[in-house]
Amino acid sequence: MLIFMGVAAFCLSFGLSVKLFYHYIMGETPTGYTTLLAVSLLSFSTILAAIGIVGLYLQETLEQVKRRPSFIISDRKNAEQKI
Picture 1: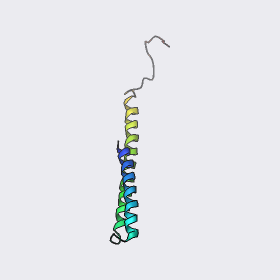
Picture 2: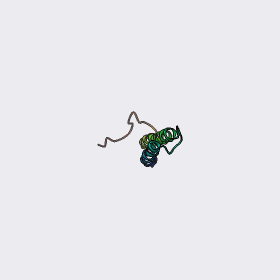
Picture 3: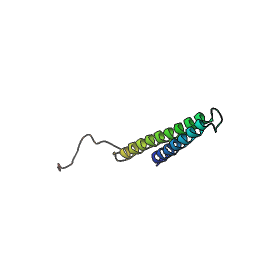
Picture 4: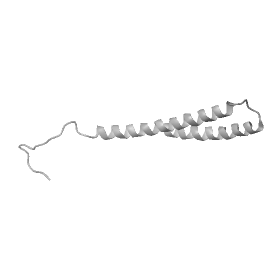
């Protein structure tokens, strides 16, 4: 879920960056505002997507750990051989 939010935020921030760049070219924004806003939006969305990827990795690791037995049997004693 967090990955999709990061990708959506990236798309929105990219579109907003294009709009801000257009306004910058037309001279309608204060100096430094466009660059600061575009970089912070793109950075935030990239970090959000990266956290989502790490979350998926941790979720998969937890699921694999849950399926393992809590003990290991090394020898069989008084057991019939069933294969």
